[in-house]
Length: 293
Image 1 (cartoon, one colour):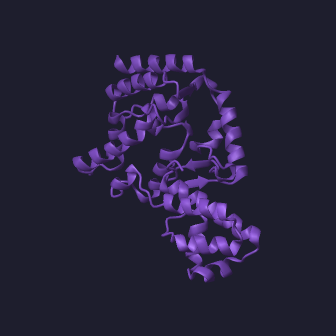
Image 2 (cartoon, rainbow, N blue to C red; image 1 turned 30 degrees about the horizontal axis):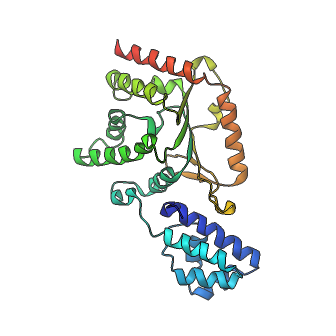
Image 3 (tube, rainbow, N blue to C red; image 1 turned 180 degrees about the horizontal axis):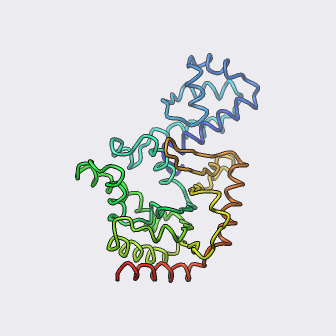
């Protein structure tokens, strides 16, 4: 199996375990007693949360649920996958706990859809723009810690230029985000020039909702990022999409099919309010020149 990243593997495994249990008619109480774990631990296993996964437990549950030998082998392989670490684990002390899941999902996603109204999408930011945001949020942060966060940021952005495994990024940006001078005019001039260059890459689409659109559907939706994951050779193991919404007191990860359907519809509505890619690039460069005056 191609490496999926520990978080995605946990989520895939959890969905399969829960489906097997429900389809077999085995109660959660019986299942947790069979492997001698708490109610919380079984819940964490079935929801793909961070928890130690003992292969013997997975094998035992598969037997109780009546899973075939082939299905059991697949789940044991996923269990092994959860022990593998990605590059982000080396920066565990610098990545906020709530944002760690986002970084893991971003790293394994095949396609990202980002709609932003105030700030530019993270993967399209320059180092200078990012530093300005960090200093705004953490004005007393020592320089070395700031640079460690910038290094994490560069690692995240690297997938845009990865010829072997490029992520497809579709960004819809409100023009107001282009006109918010994060870091000052000089930083924004460079940022928008960078944004225009990156938008020419075949795996990147940047479309702008102009101020002339006035009121449009996306204003009531709010910023979001949608993750689509690679198709698994075994169709039912493909991880469903996730929508991420950043909040001041906590982040939301939406996964219910109806929620995903509504956000896909919202994205389709948003696209009707945007300029096409060529006109979006022209507007971005025009605003960059304004910052340069």
